[in-house]
Length: 325
Image (cartoon, rainbow, N blue to C red; front, side, top):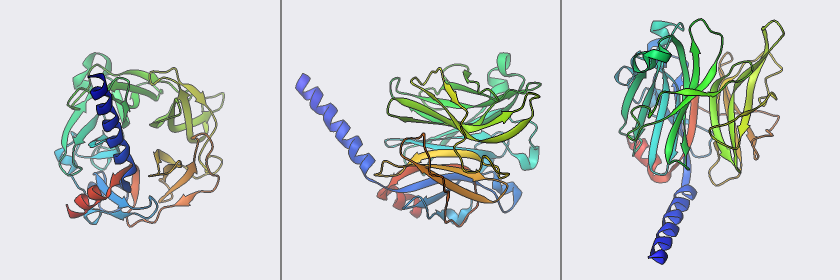
């Protein structure tokens, strides 16, 4: 029995390895920054074979109407994650064209096993957790990380409460059907000056939490911002904040946000991409260790205007399937 069990484990690991090595393309999930305002804050997909030259799917029209998956009628900051043959998307439940920036109390959770058919749930923190989140103002840029040790999915996001200046990361594990949380979200990490757009990547025993941070003077006035990171040897922390700026624009007047890090297929190189939201550009830098990044930026070739998105690797079969759809 031990031999059979061990053989089964080896076969499963081999299948996973084959699947990982079979990634031949990339899928970019994003929301749009141009066109009719009421259509911008909706989920879109684009594909690429080299992670640099991108083609929007569905003629750059939404693949799912936000009014069918969100409470607000809009979504922003879609983050897509794959774990073998399962796919997960979380997004900010926010429709600024209609409701402005004053408040968004929730997020959207989605999951699929084929990238075509999606099940979704919208969570309003004020209604779900009225005792501790009744005064929540923003729930921004959620992302999902697969915790192998617990075989669970950790969802994390930035929270701001009304009347407070803090922009802190909170988190909670998703329930089994990815329709909500196992428990009420709790504080995960508090950056010294606040942070948004968190993105966790694991490499060589270290969890890297990338985010848009800032620096303030003694009077609390921000004078610099950009992409920073904190690291930890445990997903539950503590997180050690590094005040170094990683993006090429931190010392300029050009602002960036919505950073996302992904590993290139069949390569030891990682891409740090970000949204130059005031300049209408989307650029990236490269790294092999997640601490040191190329100084020169590179640009994507694309036929769309993405805002704060994320990328996963996909197989040739998956590429053909979503092309067909």
